[in-house]
Image (cartoon, rainbow, N blue to C red):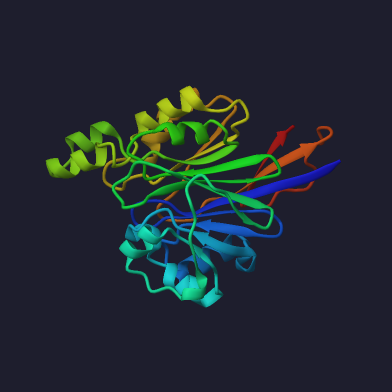
Length: 281
């Protein structure tokens, strides 16, 4: 009998800042660093996540809400930053040269026991990527800032046990709201963002039988409401836990637990900020 798990949490999710934590008992990575270093430290402390376990930061694209806290955070903790050359050039970031590492699409990067797999997506950035993070047969997707669910998105979403999935806007709120026409077109276009309905269609048609956790992410402040997204997904959730990731505070720490050999009930008392999900192979 052996127990292995992945911990995951949203440190912040929204057009104001994005930062996601995925790790095991020994190491972790951050996907994006849009929150200030100080605020990231505060939130990780509240979640009882050890910053010393963070071994690298992976950057999806150059928009400010994904990189605003990167320079300070990387320098303070001497953390390697995995970023493509085109994203780095467009970001105007001044990172310490010895901390800069590139990655290639469809080629995994190993960080301890974690395998981080970058894949391309459709978004209005120069070289945007999403990621899956895998270990112990568990797959966690970070799939946000996508204009539509392209073949790469469909492929990787369908393998996930847990996923941060963009559910950016309510179509009615966007179209009836005060944004100018060109901005509405940008948001709803193929290089913009995924709507609640598009996210639900992806969930209904491509979710894996082993999908346990869906974190609806990157909700718009002006064109969406958490309750709207929750109400849309609730009738279809089934055995999948659906949570809206907040733009104002950190999430709970979720634990994906893979149990080999046989099923054993969880007996350890859960911390109030943790939520355990058991995946049986």
